[in-house]
Length: 524
Image (cartoon, rainbow, N blue to C red; front, side, top):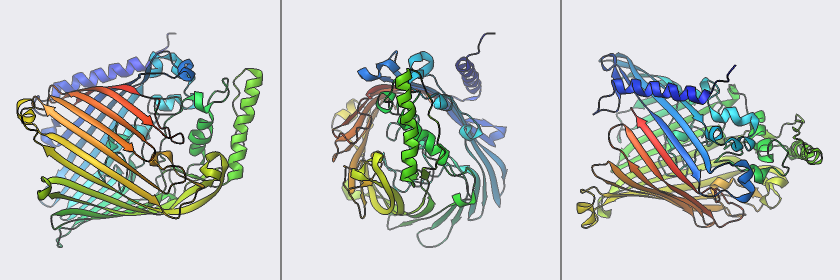
């Protein structure tokens, strides 16, 4: 019997959806209205690819080409007005997505790099948890608004770094902040969410979030994929079926994670929003489990890691792949922490009418591991530390003499700059800090700047967008100049290089993954 190709089936499904959407879409409105306007549907079909500009010599055995990622994704979401009258409104909102990562379909050698345990989970959704992005009832009556179901919460808007926007854990398997929006990276959580619009001075809006016990872990990049570490760096033995990163991080984090539903997983959040003295401000409190676990038993970590290396040495001797035997020890535990924070946003007339936004946070009682010389291979303890930090964003539009008027049809040059700073209190030389926080080894603080420059022309058909970030203390960053073409309400074509660098040996990031990014998107 001929083996069916799931990729071709998915492409056919997307084609049918695309043709169907064209039957309903009005050229002037990139949405679909059904049931006399009671049901509004929108979404997108997107294709994006990362083509590496250079494959290091030690990685070439895992690549037959420079194609590193080729993802087709489809999202459809709808808002149904179930009931609406002068006293109350009841809506149902739902979003569904599907994707297929097909780089390994075109380049078979990539299958050698991705652990077989993760290949299917990485390639396409596995269950309804992956497919349903949001699904909640939205009930409004007077000053009260209640939402019950799976939701994505937006509490902050800074670029690249998260400050107070911490409710939803991220899925980093297919992209990173900066190159992709926060909305594309967040995972929905099942929760109760309530609002009360008061008549108090400042037009205060009270918001309450309660998660009764649904836990969703941070999803890290998969070993051997574009965003994950290469097996050439994590696999010391050629014949081993996967590297130490997959064994001690991807697999073990999942094995030791809290139960999906448990009372102990509860999360509570409160946000107060107001408008005073021309300042739109919020205050935030959030109490939850940390997205990432800590090592609670260093001896168990040695036992667990030792099982991998024991099979690796046997594999080297025999020349055959040998799967490590799980010793059944518990290494990680997911701890609770609290976050206090807030935001402030205002327009300052005497500064060119620019928009300024400040987001600040104070993490209370977050857990860290300690290792000799801050090494993850020499962990000996866990400790609690507090951290404070802020992100300051500046946004403005500029009329460049002659150029804006004659070259760009009076469409202004848009600028967004963000400065970020954080400091861990009571720091020590042995404290292990996640590499994405851009701390220099043994240093308590980190800082970075991010930028987003944009110029439209030809009535927004063409755009040049330049996004990037730089952490000066470790000289680590990325730059992504992109050219965008949007010929109508529906189609978007984007492309350009994504360049990474790092001048710090202890935090290299994606320094060797410079790529050409190509995105094609159809919106409806």
